[in-house]
Length: 250
Length: 266
Image (cartoon, rainbow over all chains, first blue to last red):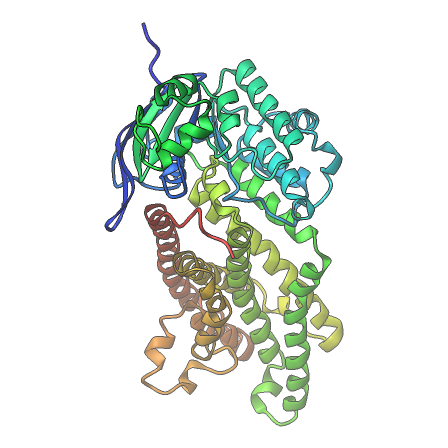
């Protein structure tokens, strides 16, 4: 018996007047998968993620997460998910520890101090626990945001540009942390990224979007083979420029 | 799963207390204006008491008015300014994707508004005793009724203002400061409602604060507690607070439709 997908959308649409930000997207993501949502700016990645989180109401279509209908049953799902994005932030004047404590309590985390200590060590942020969040560098903020996203040990982790603003060394470490977390928890990861090597390394499924529609899906290796390219970077460029698989760029 | 969680409300209230604790200037600022107002009106009272029969009869009339007015003003500001913090910090989306319910957000905002009001006005109330020998608590038990009604009205306006800013952006922030001052002349803080032109009086009686300030004058001048005023104020406040909550929740729903929650910020 096949396990039902943890994230499923059917003919999902978000229209703003004549603008079709998301146009009939149907996706299915299995438990413990790491899936990338790729596409150029305005392709509909953030809009899709926002609808999965209940931050944005779909114009039409169906979303099912962990077996619950979203947005109708979003309250049952939110404690089991989390999200990190450069589009949202944390209160600047609160210290890192205060911010994480508040969110740990909001998510009903038991043994808050213990959880903070683990995340502080894993993400190497314990050294600035007592500093105001606003005084951190962009890279440090990204790590704290990731710590916030891991507080409740989510079954589904949605990540928008998870390693943006990080130097290559820290970004690599973050990817390692995400991989470890995914392995030991069996969580499902859905990430929007522009970093194609990150996608190749982390993801077993890729959904390519253009103008709010899915234009290609598959495993990274499979897409590279289908488009006859050497890596995901080239596949991304082909798709973003509207070149079909099998076509040769003159 | 569907119940309102005191634990989550407490978590968010803790966030606001952390914020308050993080800046001494904020705490001083809370008490600064109520204290300055109290000092100013205390001197005015001292000056006028030799020239006014009304003030001779009840010296605390103006001071009671200004301190109670500050309860209304601070409770409104305490709610909306704290909500604006979430917008400035681009934190609202984070909150709304957490298990926190919008109604719990409202309860947390109301709770912290109460703390801020008690701190701000409380200090001015206490200072009025050594400064002018005036004790607001001499109003007795009715003071509790006045206080609750003014808080409720402040929260109702605070929720409406917050909804406006969520809908129209931070450009509408100045409404938070201006809104309540537009109502001040109608509330009869320093003068009876009968002083207003006849055509304006029905409008004034639609405001719960008008009943509070008339009730305050009844206690101070006639030594009578007007329970009817208190009931009218409570009824009106129930309607306005219900409206405020409904409009705030509807605005959040509308923001989810328009996709503005990810864009909220400076």
